[in-house]
Amino acid sequence: MAAFLTSNANISSFLSTLNPTISSFAAAQLTALLPSTVQLQDYACTEKQRPSVAHNYFEPETDLPVIDLASLRSINGSERDKSIKELVRAGKEWGFFRLVNHGLPLPLITGLENQMHKAFALPLEMKERAVSFPNAPWGYVCTARSASVHKPLWQEGITLPLDPHTRKEVVNKLWNDDKEQCKRELSAYINSVQRIARELLEALAVGIGIESEVLSKYLVSGNSSSMLRLNCYPPCPDPSSILGLGAHSDPDLLTILHQDDVGGLQIYRDDRWMGVRPQVGTFVVNIGDVLQILSNGIYTSCNHRVMLNRERPRKSIAFFVVPQPALTVSPLPQLVDTDHPQLYKTFIYSDYVASYRSHKLDGKSNIEKFRLQN
Ligand SMILES: O=C(O)CCC(=O)C(=O)O
Ligand SMILES: [Fe+2]
Image 1 (cartoon, rainbow, N blue to C red):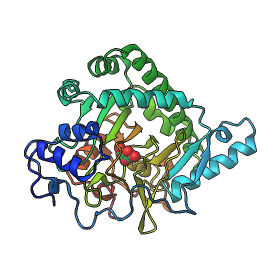
Image 2 (image 1 turned 180 degrees about the vertical axis):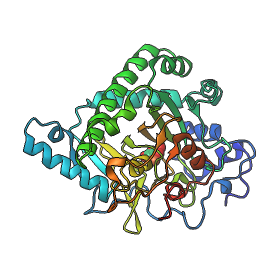
Image 3 (image 1 turned 60 degrees about the vertical axis):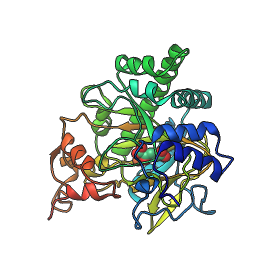
C-alpha cells in the first residue's frame, strides 16, 4: 500500500482519498513533515515494536497509581507521610503515576495548548527558522525529517530552556502577534511545573531516607539543563505499523507530562503495553533513568511509547528534569553499602546522552549499558 508513496504530493493526495475526515490542514501538516524522498514504509517499526494496542484502548479496571499533590503538601504530618509512602511505592513499582490536585489552573494548560496549535500550524520554513542555536536543542525540530539513528519518528516538537532570555528568542521566532502573551504563559507554566518537580523530588528523597535537596538540586541553575518540550504527533495513514515515539525510558530524573484528550501514551508493564487514559488537567509523571541510577535501583524508570491515529493530531507538553551535561552521575553513596552494592557505573552525564543518542530507541537498553557487572 505504501510503496508508491514516494513524494510529499503523493502522500497528501493519498491521505485525502484514504480518509476524507483527515482535514486538509492535517494533510498539509503531514506533507510539510516529510522529506521529498521518503517512503511511508521507511517509518514502519520492527515486528517486535509493532503497535499492538490501539491509541484509544484503555484497560477498564487499570489505571496508574494516583498521587494527590494537595496531600503531599498537607501540613497534617500523617496525611503527608501517607502520601510520601504512596509516592515512593509508585516510583518503585510503576515508575509512572498520575498527579492530581497539583494546583496548576486548567486555563494555563489549555492556553499553552492553544499557543502550540498556532505555532505548529505555521509553514515548515517558518518553524525551521526557529532552529538557530548551535550545539543546543532549543527551538523547533521536525523529528520526522531529521536523520538520526532514532528516527524516523512521526513527531515534531519545540524545545524551550528554563533560561527566560533564550526562551524569549525562540518565542520571538515562532510566534507572531501574541508573543508577549505566549512568553507570560510559558513562564507561568514553567514556574509552576518546576515547583511541582521540586516538591516531588524532595518527597522522593525524604521517602527513601536521604536529605530533601539531594535530588531537587538538579533543578537549580548551574546543575540543571531541564527543559520544556511541546510535542505534536500529526495524524498518520498507517498507525498499525508506525509509532509516534518508539519504546524508550527517559534519560532524565523525572518527566512531568500533560497529554491532550486524544490518547496514545502507553507504558510497558507486566509483559504488555497498557494505554494511559488521557485525563485533561492531570499530569502523568514518570521516573527517568538518572533517578534510577542515583537511587541505586530503588526507583525504576519505565518503558513507554506513543501510538498514532489516522484522524487527529495529538499534543503533549513534557517538562524534563535533566542534569547539566558536565555533571558526574553515580549512585548516591548514602544508598550504597555491603547489603546494597553499587549497581551502576559513575559517569559524566553527557556520556549517557551520547550513548542514548547513538542507539535506536529500544526500551530500557541504554541504562543497561551503565550497569556494573558485580
Ligand atoms: O508525548 C507523550 O505522551 C510522551 C512523550 C515522551 O515520552 C517523551 O518525550 O519522552
Ligand atoms: Fe518519554
